[in-house]
Image 1 (spheres, rainbow, N blue to C red):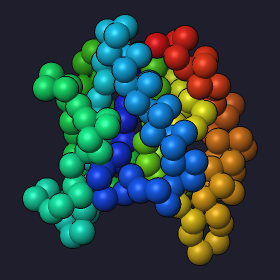
Image 2 (image 1 turned 120 degrees about the horizontal axis):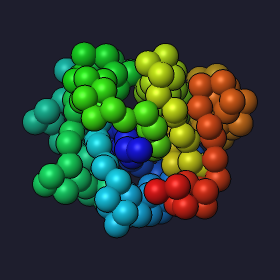
Image 3 (image 1 turned 90 degrees about the vertical axis):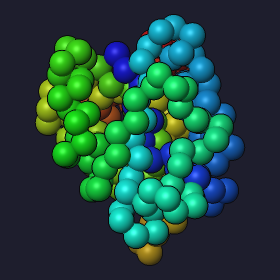
Image 4 (image 1 turned 60 degrees about the vertical axis):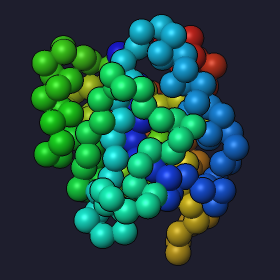
Length: 170
């Protein structure tokens, strides 16, 4: 199993996120537990070539989740962490079959990455309150979170599990 941390970049890890404090606390604990148990932690950063791009303030990974020197970072240009990043090939070369995912944003890159991971045959595992989003023009952040975590993904594209079960799995 690997722990995949998606798009937790400085400019989008803000207090506007649904359950911000819980998201930050849980994600930090996942990363710490994975490292303690020698579970590989892999990071993905979104580079849109405009506001969120290399060299621009806010592009780097949120300090509280910062990767260690030996941890891999893959950059992406679309919602899915698997499209043209090298992540898929890397995981296949390691014969990885399980991905525990955390990060941002629930209704964008987390959704796309979970569905694409499923399509590539990975067992996608989603710990509770380890992904988040902000309000959009159609749904509140809470509605988006609950729709994806409680209805859309579980037993379709992933296994949505309690945070405690995720810690135990790592």
